[in-house]
Every structure is written in C-alpha cells, then in structure tokens.
Amino acid sequence: MPALLPVASRLLLLPRALLSMASGSPPTQHSSASGSGYVPGSVSAAFVTCPNEKVAKEIARAVVEKRLAACVNLIPQISSIYEWKGKIEEDSEVLMMIKTQSSLVPALTEFVRSVHPYEVAEVIALPVEQGNAPYLHWVHQATASVSHSGTAPSSA
Image (tube, rainbow, N blue to C red):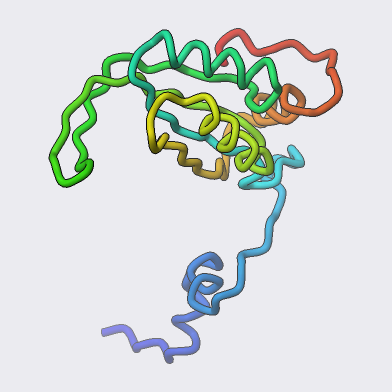
C-alpha cells in the first residue's frame, strides 16, 4: 500500500489555477508554449440573442464596421426558454457569437444595448484562454483602432 503524501506535498500537485483561486489572487498570465505571444483571456467570445435574423445582421454588421468585433457568427433558430416578468416564455431567436478583444467588451455591450430592441439585451462574454494563434492575432488586428493590412481568415 503506498504511503500517503503529507498534506503540503499533495497541495503541490494541485494545478496552479486552483491554488490561485483558493488564495484569492489572480493566476499569472503566460504566453502559450508555442511562443505565439497570445495573452490568455485577451480575446473574448461574446453572445447576444436577437429576435430575428434581420436584427442580428444589422447589429453584426454595425459592430464589425465600428471595429468592436472582428467577426460575428449568426446561429439561427435557437430555442430560448426563460422566465420574464413572472411568466415562463419560449421563443425562437438568433444567437450572435461575437469575437472581440476583451478590453472592448464594455463598449460592445453599451453599443448593443443602445440599438437592441429587447428591454434587457443579453450580452455575455467569455474569455478565450487558448486557440489558433494566427486567428487570435487577427482578432486583435481587426479590432485595433488603426487600419491594418492583414486579411481576414477564410472562415472567421
């Protein structure tokens, strides 16, 4: 029967992120092992639901034109079930998946709120920890305040 490790030794086996969460301090940001220079979490995928494709396309085009997003994917005909004003609702909606710099999420949220037809627009964002380094670099370029000479990937 293997000997039990002392508690301190077992703590060393925990992933760094778990220890950081337990201590309340944020984990340190490292570049990926490939040396891409990507800072984990510097790109986000934001999600917005819209009542129909027309509204979704208008918002998508506007956020890309304003460089608040590099790319917006429209996912049609999702079913949403939610509670609103004391009643269970069920609607068909279009889901927007928006790729942007994490630092632009507040401005993106404000813009969406200003043009969205819903009383309370859904705008939620998740940081991208890993991905295709050239794509993540392109997201940064496409949302930079100055114009860039790079080209968009064929499938954003």
